[in-house]
Amino acid sequence: MSLRTRPLHKTLACEIEGLPLWEPLDEVTVAELQALWSNWGVLVFRRQALSEAELARFCALFGPLERTVRSDWASPSIPEVTVLSNLKDGLGRPIGGLGDGELQWHSDQSYMVKPATGAALYALELPPEGGETFWVDLRAAYAAVPRRLRARLSGQRGIFDYTKRLAGYGREADQNISEEARAKTPPVTHALVRAHPETGDRSLYLDSTTTTGIDGMDPISGPALLDEAYAAATRDEFVYAHEWRVGDLVLWDNGFTMHRRTPFEPSARRLMKRMTMQLDPKRHVMPDGALAESGIGMPV
Ligand code: OGA
Ligand code: MN
Image (tube, protein in one colour):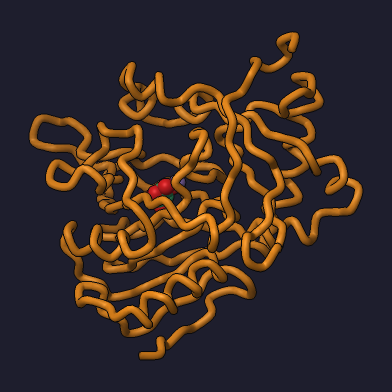
């Protein structure tokens, strides 16, 4: 079967039309989807009606499902499914993560040594306005970075610290993590430039909510260079803006994209289900994490 596709942006994001994901997919279709994802970075499937088990089964076609450190956001029925919502249960406890606040440009899992870079977000309830999600293509961004800035970024490793990400969350419940989760998230470094294993295309690897500096640079110059990189990388022309409809499933590759979300009214309802997958490093851009050896500005 050949898939019907529709590009949603020049380089990033493609819609796959008329494919019911609750039905089993044949091998040829799966291979086609894998190639499309590796190439477009963001895939959109509309009008889906999926149980958690169906969502998990579909996502597992792309790689092993990951349980993230946010076990507090996990679905009670399938722990690999993360619930993202501002809704509360009968006792007033959040049913999932991330509330109604704004999320700045970030790449999921960048705080891990080995980030699981595949992500899927499935929309079940949406606010009348706000709660929009945007993705940026960091291949196109890299290609357009002025030569001198590119030279200054080349060979550098960013320091990615989950503590910074946590401090940025608007809701106290999201800022607190278990001792176990804390032990799994020490500061790490990743190269700021990576290449696609098949095409060789270079891309930036960035996360404005998590980077605190550049390995080996002082605490003023490191963040200043990162600021320049963020300004160059997030120009509108590299951005795909998704208009959510209930039933949308969006897959994205965190290896060469960032995404952000606008806030929405606390009284509105938003309910999303989220999967995280380890993608195949032969097909997808992979960050090359290492534990950070020193804090910022500390003598090495
Ligand atoms: C995520 C995320 C944005 C949104 O799932 O990683 O950043 O729109 N979500 O909820
Ligand atoms: Mn995210």
